[in-house]
Amino acid sequence: METTRQQKIAKQIQKDVAEIFQKEGAGIVRGSLVTVTAVRMSPDFGYAKIYVSIFPFEHSAATMQEIERQNWFIRRALGQRIRNQLKNVPEIQFFLDDSLEYIEHIEQALKNDKNE
Image 1 (cartoon, rainbow, N blue to C red):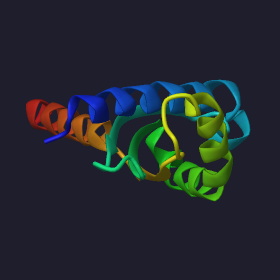
Image 2 (tube, rainbow, N blue to C red):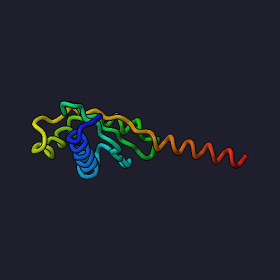
Image 3 (cartoon, rainbow, N blue to C red):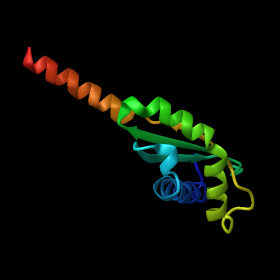
C-alpha cells in the first residue's frame, strides 16, 4: 500500500517524465508516441519504476532500448525538475506497459470470430 506522499511524488514524476519526453526527448522517442502510464515509488523514494506505453507497437523494442540507453539524460532532467521536492533523485527504471497492445490483439481476435 502506497502512502499519500508516495502517490503524490509518483504523480509528479509521471508528469515530469512525460514533459521530458515531449519537450527534450524527441531524439529518444524518434517519431513514436510515448505515454507515461504509471509510476511506482519505493517507500524510501530512492527507486522509481516508470511504466511507458509506446505507439506504434512495432517500434516498442527499439524505443525501449533507446530510453534505457538515455536513462542518465532522463534522470538528470528529472532531477532538475524535482530538486525542490526530494533530497535525492530516485534511480529510475523503465518498463513497457503493453496493455494497449493486448487490448488491440483481443479486439482483432473478436473481429475475426465475428467474420467467420
